[in-house]
Image 1 (cartoon, rainbow, N blue to C red):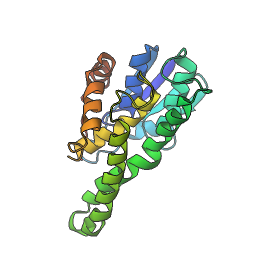
Image 2 (cartoon, one colour):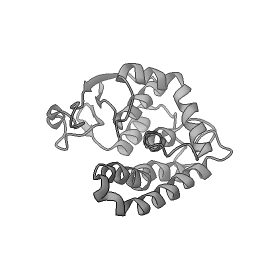
Image 3 (cartoon, rainbow, N blue to C red):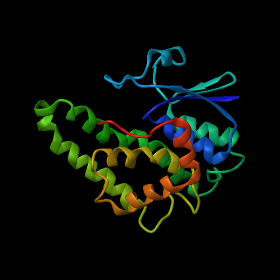
Length: 208
């Protein structure tokens, strides 16, 4: 059976959401961050050398990267759901969002997180980080104008993978100006499968 190694307040929340949307049978193993350091527990290193989450195991398969996990679960367990056909024009946009989330959009958000912890020492970097945040959040907001989902007319893996971007932006107090992205996140939070994922995965918050 597919097993999700789930760390609280982490990217693994979206994998749990995906599994609930698909109705895929799975086992959930929960791990808790250290309350002071916010680091993952060492037990995760026994699952994968990086000691990070999400990680899934499925028989002999072990995958640690969120985008690769989303792609694998949908291809192997999706029964044709939640992704465009690879030979359709929509597939390239779908594939781009899968990579864009972590490859581009998350970089300024993570820089904002770490540089903020430097307090005054990080002040010189904030203007550039703010510029990049506006660039990426504005781009995503524009892509959602007049759209309910990132690709096509139904929820797809692109929506799952992109969800961590507005979650982090919201935690930093940066989301409000982006009305399309804000509305999209509210719609995702209202989905029964998302709400089940929170119930099963534990309290969902980001301490920044």
